[in-house]
Image (cartoon, rainbow, N blue to C red; front, side, top):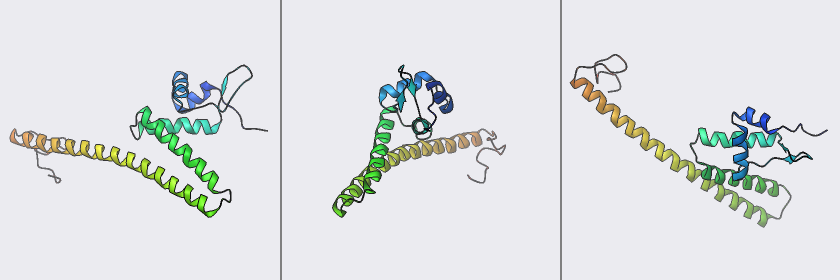
Length: 157
């Protein structure tokens, strides 16, 4: 007997999104139902749920927009295809070509994450600069900072 297929509402609930969001992701090509009922109703399997959760993770954790997410999931799909092809006993030359392509895809994904981290690091550095300035002004005015110490009187200062 096959895997239990889920309705769109069940998938949406498990991912914490609306059914409208699931349909929208389908329109964008981020998600594709595994099957449809004879009446045309979308049916999803656990891989589809995992894909939807991955899209949500890339949004919330990484802060990627939908175009970036589309590129990431397409790259991950291609890496899955390459892994499957690599294990099929291909000649060494073809396996080397698969490895080269996989390394290039991985490098592109890594560059995307590194760019995001650089932007986050700069944002954090800006917040740190502001915090130092706020403590300086607070000290000049005899105010206490969030730790209760007089402005600038923290161990980290």
